[in-house]
Length: 369
Image (cartoon, rainbow, N blue to C red):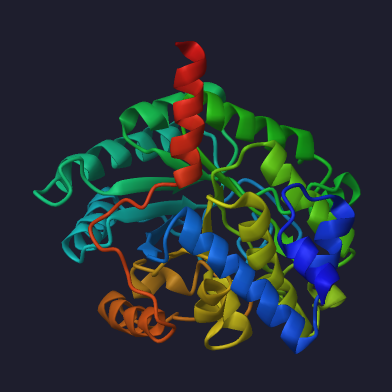
């Protein structure tokens, strides 16, 4: 008991410390982990939940990740790209509903036409969503993959200010088992550095429970987030897609996968303190109340899907993705009820920027002065 208490209240964590916390399964121990995560959440950033209305605007991808349902080699996917009017109107709907922020997510491409399109989208969304409550328009998070430093700077100048680039793992061997040889972990990490240099609030994350992964690897991932001064964490359980090379490898048993994923959220909160952490949709694919459980373990962001329902089924990264047929208004009402069911509330009409980023930016400015 006292050993766990010492561990939960440490200032600096080793890989071994984090492994122990991630491995907790006893009901009483897990409850104490959860409570400590919420204690830190409340003391560092408050218990409000922030919405990011997510628009999956294209499933065309130039990459071939072995686990992903929209990988370029999957010929069974109906490919689509939403037109500008549809994406902008979705963002305007978000602003009207008080969501405060949107996420523009797509498959990864670097061709000039794609980059120009994303840049134009950002500018138009900022212009069209300005209001008395949001004088600078909705906050914009991008998740469109690896780009050049110049491209990141263009996106930032256009008005996007948060970027999520998941690395999936920091273990070189595991990374290569998840990707073709042409995709390199070092290039992914370099892009995180580029994003910081461009001025973004930087988000990353990992797949939890992927084949061959160990708790030691996950512990090192968390320390990587700390060492890289990451502002936002978006991570979720590994779930199989049947049209991928990894389908035959199966996945972790659901109860174990869920608890490991929840422990990751709690331990990230304990170690990283003031970062934004998302309760992802993939948690809801494991159990119906997965997102609420993620929030109850220290997450403070969730992402209602506002992608038009007619294309949602074509943006299926894994099997069992929830809310495929649920309209955005239904999703809004459902998710609000879910958040309030655990005693939390949504902070409407706010960007909900990372407190960690604010502190990091203040420190940079102080160093310059």
